[in-house]
Length: 503
Image (cartoon, rainbow, N blue to C red; front, side, top):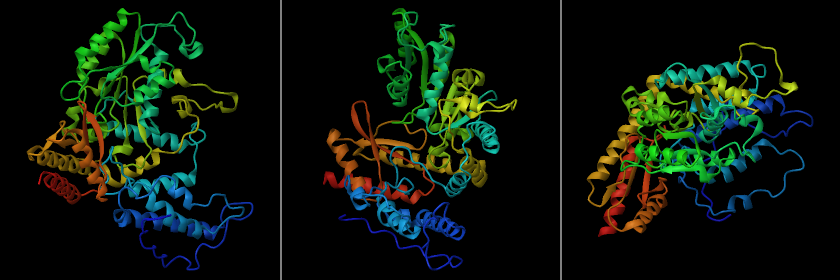
């Protein structure tokens, strides 16, 4: 493997641990021997701490490797007998850790920043040790009840009213699939369709079912249409306005046109914090329209929903409390390691009616309990709420607010600098912690060249989008390891590159 990044220095073995390494392979019929188990977990903890305390910042955000290079350096065949764990850790340090894209890097500003915080990493370790499958209350009483508690904590933290019931999925893509399946089960405007039992295929008594969202909505809407049997032709991507928000008049026209053509609107997906620009659709106006037309309203607040922890930001999401279902992702901006996404629904009984299916071997006799397998298509469910609970406990609500406010303040300052620069254009409003911009001159080629130069520096990683047909750079702040100094350094790099191009 050529030009491989140099790994950070080997972490010292803690003085309390044996000094002869992890030399014993797994026993022939069980787990690692007791002493080695402890040494293995301590070694993993040391590796994680070294990485998070500063090792990650020593790497370029994007590893300088070519496709296939990592695989070629790994053993092609599995070992016939167990190997010492120290050898496994050595390959991890030498081949894997340096060659991932470092999402925990303080200069990771691409997509939406996520943080594997220390409390969350610790919780992931404990959750893996417990190895709970919380498909039923019986299979994980504490896990099920903690999930209900933490979802209610977050509901209160972001100011959502009582009546919303939350549960944890892996990602927002899963959550929207579940929410829209519940909408399909209820099928407002066509009672008695019984899609759960009879399905959609080959039925002459069902019209085409249609989903609506803005042209800025996440691709998970289309993916849900694929899985639910609606087809992407029945996703109406409605025009957005100059601020990249859903045009409600255009939405009303699309609903009317489909009804006139004999189609049935299934649901509207409004976005509170779009992926490209973090714009917020006019939620009250959309909710008014959905109420008048008796259409399910789902709100995708996967990114921006976490910012509602700050009361002064909450007004930007006004109207989201009127949704039938909504999503926010603690793994985006509540500092919880990926994956952890919360789906809230108003009608918990309706959600259960859409999904509950209990084979004989999963019947139980507990009354008044939640069996998470009834809340979606998954049977097996990891103990994801443990990391959310630990992060909230460790940072506290005020601590989370301080961090989110700092990210928003740094983004505003960066946006002001960009807006004031004669050779740059601020491409969209920056209501939260994401800034979109491009060079004023030179078109898409200049924008692409600037992005490539920033990423080639190694200290930062930015991603792009297309706004108004123009290639646009995005800076998404939100990682706990990012400081204002990192944002200042990014600005100095951007300004220097732009000025250099014009000399």
